[in-house]
Image 1: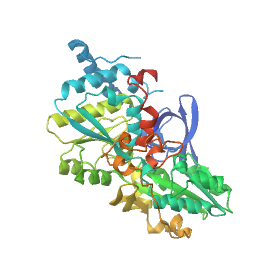
Image 2: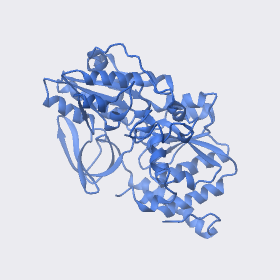
Image 3: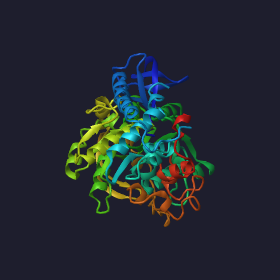
Image 4: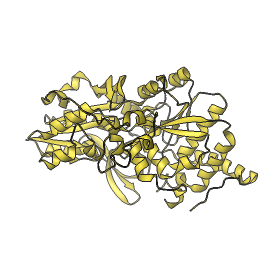
Length: 89
Length: 369
């Protein structure tokens, strides 16, 4: 119930006075209520909970988080692998 | 899927694990609040990747698990009444009440329908004007905006045959209750990222200050969870106790203001009983008096309910982080997802269900996604 799913907004329209839209979840399209993300535009990625978009995903913040973690990864490769390395299946 | 695959990258995850290993010098107990995070931790075997100094205990953030037995019994009573279409999120159907569940009411002829969204329940109400449609409005701050909107929609559409059985719970009072307990072991929190998507994290600084515990907003993918753990452990090792955001692509400090406005318009804070835990003051939301005619509890006469809990189930202690599922004598034998004694074995967010489902899997599954 708290596991929101990221999807891409591909259509925006009004239904019964509510801002609604079609959201593409990697090939599967569902209707969602967009009333809580009035700033949304087509092409935005959003997080859907029980049929409601609750957040527009920030591309810039996603990139910054990944860059931050990449810096740790780069540091690791400089230091070299530690004693415990996990098998990657 | 964009914004999913990058945060399931095994290489990045292992780098964070190495950084956690370099950072940690002593034992720490962290609690992840949300049951969705518990499932991700078990599914990807993240607990097995962490150094042994880090213990993760699992929090009460499973809405299905903490919905009080009294309310489950009320739901069973209302759903049994003729002329009622009872609608619910799917997880609720197998939750044991005192002796039966919604599935058995349905098998006995009750009209019980699983809905994906409360707006689906509104649609059912429009299509069935001669029936009473009841929606079981459970959940934390993540479902509250949707559930509240359904009430506003019913009002604006003039639907007199729609009502909600409200069992809303809030995270911050539960964190306060856990930290206040004399048995508390939790030293830092991974705050539930999607609760914070709605509410922001402005409610947390007084908590981290009062209890000297870092609180770090954390997401749900493996890289997100490990990053949340790293940020928390860094603070603990440095003697800090601040509120931090390790999930900024989704969560802002103020949260979703339009959603908070609708929640506040429809709901007001009330005391709430949590299954297995007991009453937590001001930990719930119920309908404002202006919307009381949408309250299923007053619309339907429900006879005196005497709830009866399984004497064996230790779900309450598990939900407070005091015990782990394996410490329950019934786990995996008397209690399974097919025949659960408690709600923690039912829900896709319950800790017992996560342990049951994933405990046989080895760490390192993350690359299979």
